Length: 194
Image (cartoon, rainbow, N blue to C red; front, side, top):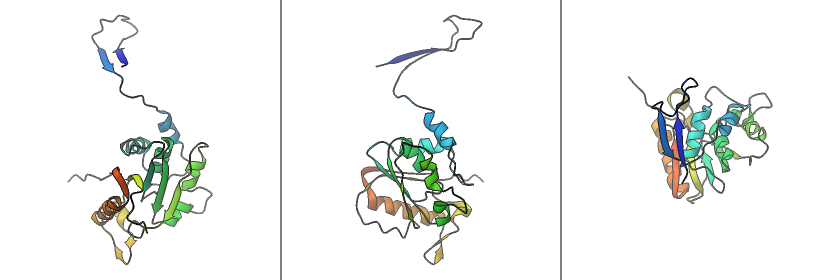
């Protein structure tokens, strides 16, 4: 075990009797390197998830080498980029091909991965969550995503407009069909306050 003693020492009072000593056991090491890398992503959109939240979600999804993670609402790829930085193989889908291909510029989701030399590039599928033709097979270690909610759910699934609750239900059904035993479903759910 490694133990740390941290003293909130001011330059004026260089003594150990400052009264602000913290003693703790090291349980994990963190790195702000991933956070800085995520903030440099060249392709961003108005709904791009912030870097801190992407790293938190990648940690909750247990992103690591040897794991395959899927984001059915990939958008600009912030979550998959965070997962790839931890070594995971990533796959993403999105209903909007303009996001995947980029709108009239050379920037697109893949650009965010090309920007980092050592990352394994993800595979992308242009489809909505209900039309993914994925068989009932346990394949993904985790499904990690930021599903559309509010005005962002105003897209069509088949011939009907969808509601946020339908999107979440489709996501849960996808998880039931495709997650390995013990796999994680990690998603954001907004909390509205009146």
